[in-house]
Image 1 (cartoon, helix red, strand yellow):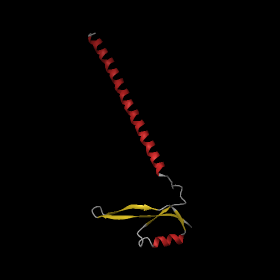
Image 2 (image 1 turned 90 degrees about the vertical axis):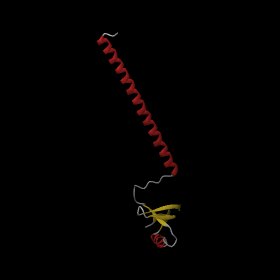
Image 3 (image 1 turned 90 degrees about the horizontal axis):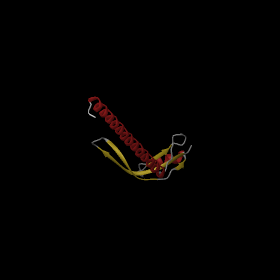
Image 4 (image 1 turned 120 degrees about the horizontal axis):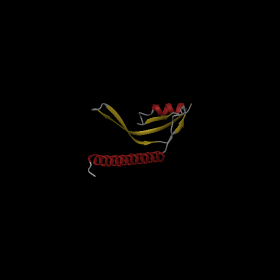
Length: 118
């Protein structure tokens, strides 16, 4: 059975204060189909050549292949939605203030009439 893999190179740093290691990617290859034998060869040599192997699941429906342009477009659309929602909230707040002001003016007129100040 073949696998789709990419080789990632980078630097690993260990933070002793947080007791965790982080891997900073410098480069990544394109995804390539490899046989089980080729995968084993690559896997055995990963420490010698200082790289990591990333295996992309082939048989799962959850694999989402998106380009950076698609991510940028999605982010742009989400930002636009946020702006629209913010404007809706602002307009609703202003409308509420107008209604409240009108109610207060009506109440003031009623009280003036009641107290005979008109």
